[in-house]
Image (spheres, rainbow, N blue to C red):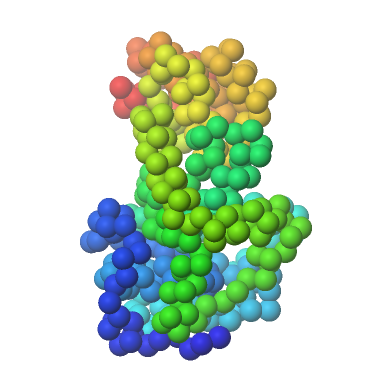
Length: 341
């Protein structure tokens, strides 16, 4: 691997027009945290942010699954030291069954803890155009709609921070060219080539050849589709802890798309039968975990709870016309019912 450039070399480079100005405007003068693995994508993001004078710190998770895991952590430490960034690290070992799901859960719990403790405003990840296409193709083959197929957005609101993916419109090939041109060190994760993972099959068999042949057109199509998605789902949900409230539309297709998106944020992937049940009953508990309730004007979504509430709290909920199955979550979360107006 080529050596990493020193601070003076990086600072002397002219910023490349890779990052959207609209995205950069969200990052200037903000307290930003970057998810850094040491792979090519996050390393490219690291140096692009430096070129654009974006302030940030980094968080690194060492799963201790490969021989180079400790070397990647050492590289994160080296870059943080050279470029005066604060580094947060986590070492963990996970069961190999359903590893990707567990790793993602552990990773985002770690990031969330840092964000809360140190008051970061944004979390930046290095997802790129190839990732968008891989996800799109996988969902397309499963019979998904536009909302499900466009799973990733460049700027996404979370409960207490913004999740920003500045590279989402850039191909992996472009990022690798950038790294090679500036002789920047990065690590290759051999597990990304393992074809027993379904996503890797889609990557190597379909997504990568398509991107290499039609990169400009695919990037433009995703930009158009994201604009169409905004028109299709015009309302951002109101969120308090894990309670979501959205306006009820006349079109149930729009309602179920909004509900589906929120259920996924809460860690539940609803089946078609569960979606049908939601629209048929208008009030139901999905998987014994999440309750969905329609009113005349709103849709409430929250974790399901059955605690006993005091009479005063029940009366407040009745006055605010909060569905009965939603009230226990408000009670255990100490949410004032009047805050939902």
